[in-house]
Image (cartoon, rainbow, N blue to C red; front, side):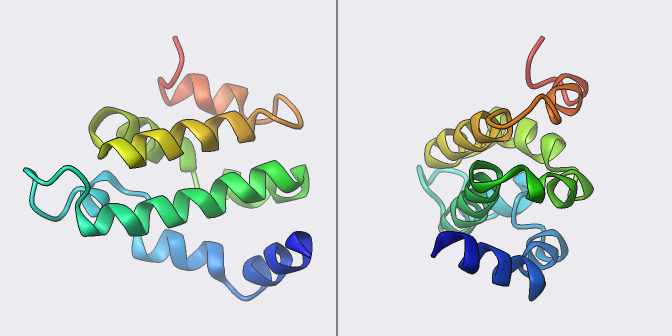
Length: 115
């Protein structure tokens, strides 16, 4: 069931929409009132992170698409400046990206997520 939905989401341009709208950018996720603990835009960023995390968790067949998104740079920035809920989901996404193989290890290191 989840695999079918994930496949349809990807096939119908869902990942491209996340890229085009910059839903994983720290500028988007923190665009509302900086004093707010969880800005409204942060909820959209969390949803985008859930998609990335779920795709990475489901199958390594989605790794090439996630690589093309250059998601690691955005994840590092969200870990530095994102709202608490965004930071937590970014951590989940990183963990799921390492689930099936070491395919993302170099990108994670190059982005400065891990020393």
